[in-house]
Image (cartoon, rainbow, N blue to C red; front, top):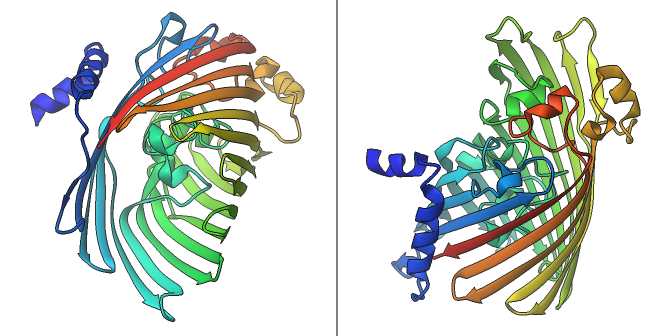
Length: 408
């Protein structure tokens, strides 16, 4: 076990190892491992990314071309009974300063469901380290195969800010129900859990202090999600909401303690035709930070994107997206926050025009690439870009990222 962990931790050799493994796998048509008529399954994936920026840094030293973007996972599921499923996933992930946790238990959950009314109504419960039901992509963002682009819209899914692990799973339980009537389906989910908010960039994001040192604790978070689907997913309307109340206990004389209350509602819509899909999500974070400073700080962010996908062939897809994040909905150009903090205006917004493509060029292999033209630096990570805290950073920059992935 130590030798495997040691291999994962060697940042300089991991890219070469990943590429070598992917190359060796090319001649084979690997499939998932299944036993007992599919009741026992084992899946896995290996993905190596490439990132380049002309200004600023994303996932490592991307101005010099960064290979610090890789994801490797193994997941298993066991159906002990027709309505009892156990599943878990171990993950290794590295994205430079945004995610240096290495090996972690991504999720491990027990799911029990009970069909009623001739199976038109299903009630169930999940418990353990459960995947967080939020938005269209959060609980299916594990690997690049389940994402529309290499990078999800960063206004909603904050990977570059180091929030992926805090968002994807939490320790608690989910109550859910599904009701189907003809071509209509309604899904409802309610979750209560302790978030993984002491990892990655979560402390800095929640407290508003880039160098926050301490521990977050407090009551469990509450999450609700309602989904209406028409014709098996041709049309989808969704509403998600997160309610958070956390206490921050500082361990540094330069970081005050305090309380954070936040509510994150998100409205989602999607239409899927035979050759094309149109997707959009809009949300905001209402936050109140108390006791950190002499006055209570309140703020409302704003996040939205519009995305179109076109399937040229069964194995080739193109994506076009416009993605916007404002640190303050009342100060979209960042002028007021710039005057208050002394930081440049571009630190308080990000407007991202993305063009992407995906090619499943062989069985179980995917090559995906995105080009982003970004105005603003609001979702850049200060650990990758320390000059941002001193007024540096370029407000207009380009990002190119590519990922090669194998799955079984």
